[in-house]
Image (tube, rainbow, N blue to C red; front, side, top):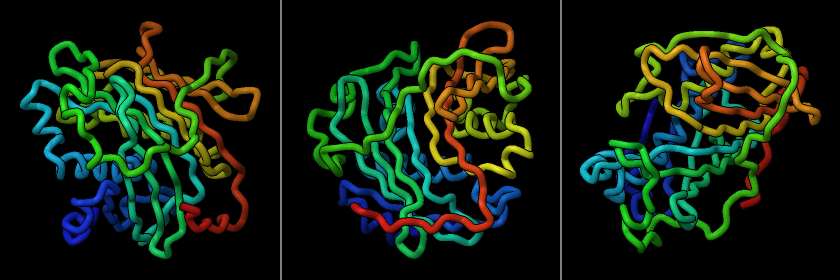
Length: 273
């Protein structure tokens, strides 16, 4: 990962916060596209640096007995970055809604073409009982320095209910030490890796991901046994549930939309913003 300090200094005073990342060979998968987990990590890093620059980051909230946690995220993907792309991640906050802090993202390549846009909801949780706190009570009532736009992208954030038979074999695994983060639970980006690892290679070789909706339900911890099951929906999307292997308790729910791969990658579209 390559983070440019000049951008940090330049954008620290702006409500739209920007970071750049270079996609290296160890960030990509068999299809020569960036691993989704790494891409989500770039977005999370940019959001973290944004709040850190305003003294409401992890250390600041930890001193108050709280921490930021992502609740839901929706992505619309035009093209995944490829090896040696230099991507720019823009993020800004939207006005808080009770316990929810919305945050928007856009990602561009080195030519200024938009690769994806995303909308997310974040919570401030106390570190004892993990209960949501009123955002403004923790970080103050004047959030104008964080607000980059009064409206957010119209991207679905809720995974719909569905029933049916799994399209792929169910996968069961155990949460490992490398899955957890400084909050001692599974980092949110790892659920995407679990999703990808549960899909047969032939499907991944022949399909491209276009939409992704993530709903985080329960924190998985070291040693938990989890199961990944994917059910097709009537509109062609796939619904994936990650839950405890020995109960119906859900850790994460994910909806994805895929398109068949063609010989040529679709041309990225310039931003309309």
